[in-house]
Length: 352
Image (tube, rainbow, N blue to C red; front, side, top):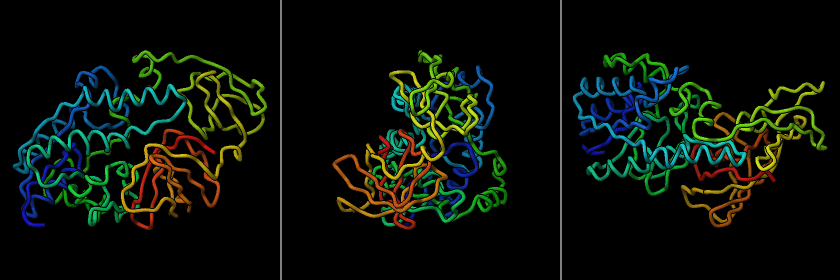
């Protein structure tokens, strides 16, 4: 690339700092953008149990990085749009008995959606971040580092936007990133990675739902025959395939189905959690595919890729896998690959 004007999503962590540093070293004009998804007071009022993004300390670190590398920093307050597009979606999905994937939608709607649009209005040529993935000829590929690959969460980005995005870290390992940062005297070179959701920094799901007016109440746990075998503590505390349920029957029980209308949890044996077919909604096609195509699919970030056939129907699809997959979970993302390239993605709707 010739010398360009590039906007970098600067989180305050080491990955985005090295992405910014790399682009600046290549001679590009760089502008840093740091987003605020919730008010700073939100973090002060809660005990942060694990490192989360977008906290006041991240803003402080982002400013130090920008000052050291001599790039302008714009702090973008996205609290209202983040509440509308991410938090409200998260709440609604749980009300429907699904397990949502907010990071998947944050990448599509916030980072490489609303914020990217603001950056393009500043006349940047490209948008960049510290994500581990590669974009080659406008197509999304896995990172070289399989351990750090984030293509699963980035598969939500709209196809046309990929042409305006660059990921400098896609060909590096985490150790290499930290070494680059240390050599450049970037103070966050050994900073802990973010783990929990930025809007639940204390990891207290129950507190979160009650705060937003969601009635979390106990209800019956049923086996497959409809017999009551216990009582759950609120459906939001469970997901498909969960092993720790709080009932003892002398056998291993797994969550098989969540029924929000009846406030009921249905459990079964391990084999009951495996399935070879599911439907997908909110389909996002990233490259040319036919109405029916073969690929591999991941139904969770760290799940095995399983060969499958995908049959498209407008904005949805039916997926048939070569072998059963454990805990296919409505609300989670299904991402389809051809070797290293991402073909498409969508949200799991129903297990068939």
